[in-house]
Length: 256
Image (tube, rainbow, N blue to C red):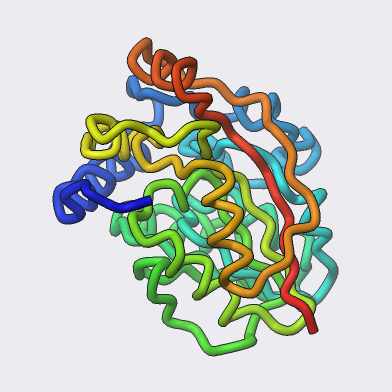
């Protein structure tokens, strides 16, 4: 998809929105948030009970993928767009104290919140780094799994995100993500609307193009499924109905 949105305006809008998500989790947004959303998407209650409440209240994901990721004790996991840390902490509970989880996010307020919550709750195997996910500050082939939830659609350089995911994965490593895609190519007036990008609508790639970007990065898609996700505002719902905007979870593998 040719990107015609003003990328500087987009980044400003996204930063502003997710600053509010971190600081004001009970505000009004185009999307749902919090534990009721997580449970409907498939997060087990027994897992959520062990995650810091402050991370759950700012959770704005679009799907569940941990069953696809199949995380094991001692593994290293990278979370792209880690927000307030709910998925990073969920991953840490699965890889255990011998494992390692790194969350990457470009929003200062989210990094500050997730780092504080992790320290308070004793998640010593988790660290959070401020960076763009198109340019990851980590070494090649250093992770067993890369995860991401509702974030890649916010990036104008999606092919760079998938290339970076492939770079940092070890041979046989897994990419397990949930994201927003569309059945039809969105029209320019939506693609150029930074507000709709920041609300997880405008940046939704057409599903076949999305798949091609993943495969073009050298990752083999093994499973794709739809999620029970819905947008809140009428404007967002109208775009979903017209263009088939929807949430999917998928698993892709880097061949050995």
